[in-house]
Length: 313
Ligand code: 8YV
Image 1 (tube, rainbow, N blue to C red):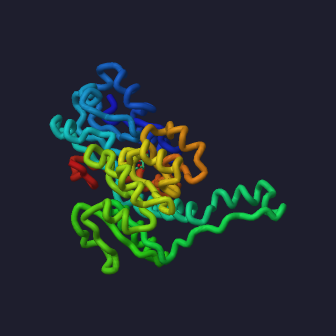
Image 2 (image 1 turned 30 degrees about the vertical axis):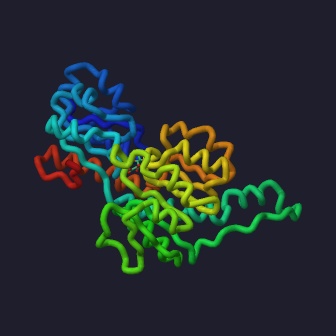
């Protein structure tokens, strides 16, 4: 009987690696939870890809489960307290994706400030050849940017934006040793949003940061402000964000994550002042290969009775 279950719609390379290992694979945890009792009872480790909540009821469908190896640094889909209570270890894939996520955060800010998407349409539509004017854009260098959350990814975003000659501000629960000397720490997130021109959300997901970016914070950024989110849709009051964008109380947004993925709120689609991405900040061939390898290596470590590489609990 198979000890390992892989759950999710993996890319071709990861899928092949999983097939070579001979692990059982299901597209969704809800499907795997309906497998026959003997199959479920044999499972000790799950390679998990997805954002469907993996809570106590689903865990109890696998009575011998000892490890959930998550594909992704954010593990907010997994109820870690419930896992710990059941003696189930959880691992994630930190570090290997930080550069890519930071790159996309910069790309979203630049795309907004320099109107990259609209300018592309201006050329393709023939407007440029008809000599129609294209509006002037916004300067990125020299402006103040605020980073909400200075974890591994936040640090990478901040150092990239510092290289763009931006004045870096950050909020986190406490000042960070990783912060460069020129970066300004704020212990009050609202005060930081008032002090900066643009902001990037790099918070962890989960209950502790649910709705962290409030209506007041969004409006503090103002009609010329731009908000980028590469964290989780849950970290922002999404209704307040859409209202502010529709009514011009926030200048623009660059979003890789949404509340109800993959069903981004349709009100976003009518807005000209947003750039939208399908939760793809870590989605490069190279990084996805590294994430898949780290996920599988954690499972191999468990099977070999060795210490887990990147434990969460
Ligand atoms: C996803 C992510 O895990 O690492 C994270 O926290 O959000 C992403 O890398 C990936 O899109 C698979 O769902």
